[in-house]
Length: 511
Image (cartoon, rainbow, N blue to C red):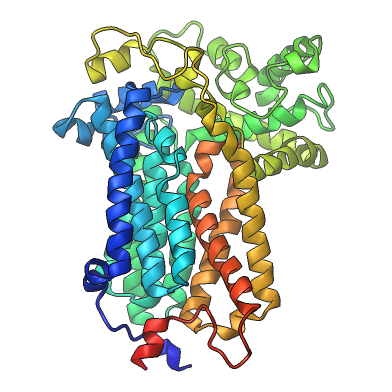
């Protein structure tokens, strides 16, 4: 139990800049990042655009407080434009923020957990020099910023386990607020943060205060968003997108069982259901490999011919006054009910045709838009031309056919990393690793495992998984998979009387 004293010979700041190993990591990381930036921008002089990009740009231009997606990234775009309105500036900022958060994460692991030198070196090389971050940062999309803020959320969470000071908790709360405003994938983050705060050793009074510092910013954002939707769309909801996604997920399942139903169609769902059955009947005349829904994706969400968009168009065909966002939000409740109604009737089929395929996607996610530059197009919409000040709407990348071949290696690579993580975790458990490490280290691993489980469940059930959504779990799974495997290897070559390879050497020296 002596290790719970958590004694460190230097402050993190002094240690970061004075430790020779850190100097090497920081120097080579800085040089490498700048060189990679220069090389990449010569290959891809323009950013990569996807359908979401234009919605983000429009929301930034109009300074909207609600949109189809959380508005955090649009606010970020607007803030960056005050200092630099170029696309290269945006890419540079997104890339530097992501790489900086990775370095902060690596140094935190090294300081608090102190794995062996070569483990941290290998992890640093694999993370800092990873070319995937370049492609993700080149998107006009929230992917890179969300991964960066998620990593800062996790890193500060680890610090809270060791040093739960009020300033740190407030910082963590602000980071949680920002990441929560960027993407819906952060919906489970406050739960993890609250659990960590509640399980820290402290008085009930201090725990209540700490919990307030962490959760109040998020609750304020939730309340403001709901009020904004109520004012602008006459609906009370936080995320209309959730209703659309629920119906879309259900339709990927129902495409395999339509037109069957085990219940009478509720009157309010009848029109939508009729459109669905008619559309799926037309798709059944196509070869399976020619169907637009032959794999999980965005077809039922965004295609104009798919049932959800068709219903929206039909419902408002004689309405030229209602803004599109209000139309989109008002049907979301109905879509949520329709998706829930379908899933309740066919839970086994939903598991077979949606959950299991998406579980495979989690294991080896589809590159999706990371596989093609600018969706295969050679031009961009007027919103991008205006925002970045382009002279023409023509853009180009490295390859003539706009394919990005390098990103094809990452789905199998992520599958391998997940295997390493599982292998390391089970080996760690089998070798009684949890009994050999200090309690704070044990809590850190419990938190990491919890985040991995929450992310798996949320990702699989929320929406079809693609590679750009998995940047954050890619980083922490690789890092801790390497540390756990290192433990297994070192455990095989030490005697029972030797110190556990995971115990912080600086603490031991201080004691």
